[in-house]
Length: 373
Image (tube, rainbow, N blue to C red):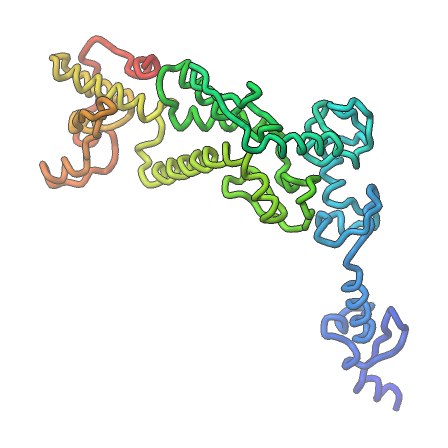
């Protein structure tokens, strides 16, 4: 009779409370396990896990909420909070000498961004003194522009904590323009910006205003549209804008130009850069070939197009437009030319409708010409 009853109403033992329960006493997933938890023990475990919303960081000994820990650290018995984790990633040192007061102080006396500056780091006390100078200089800051186009603050510095001004990146653009004697291309602007940002050592996982009085050190992450700095509150973003606005717009423009360039290349595969030449350089030699053909040098257009791996009608079917900025080259619409003149569709190949290229003039290196400018 006992065996018959067990077959009709099977039971299992809960591994937590060691009591026997029928199938109704377990959740479906638990019942399928060899060592299940009954419903009562499952609920009590879930409740205790919900109550465990804070942990003590093993380094700073602060009791912090779950959102103040990296996911992998939260699962550990002895976790590092997000701040200590990032400090340790920069350096395992526990002390550092302040650049201003020359005192060797523990890590807690520096904010994360100062800690990342190495020997140039300022402790909290020295930062407050700099802050007092900043408040005292509000409304008195002036700038001066040098003959080469660079700008300095009233203290003759490119980057000044007192004036809260940073002209480093704009000045690098100005020096490059002065050296080249022309405006910078998108690629040149992007290269200078990338080099500048790589030297900034900005930790994008921590609020840029961390350690400042207005920073609440919340677990939120607000990333600036330029994708270069992070804030934990709107207040931090407002306070930092005075400095960040000098580079933010340039970075957003660079990223937009890069995205537009990729989209254009994806939709028009033929417009991919040729041997690292910019579109401006390509247009310059297209104009040269166009004018050379017009002045009696036969096969100049075909030779130039062959070296650029494009159809000769891109140059031969184009035109030169005069504007306030100088000469501009408008490329020929090869597809439209073939459709209107012969009623056939262009397949996109550089030799469509033409014979294999044969050198018929004194060879000329158009690629080298483009690089020379």
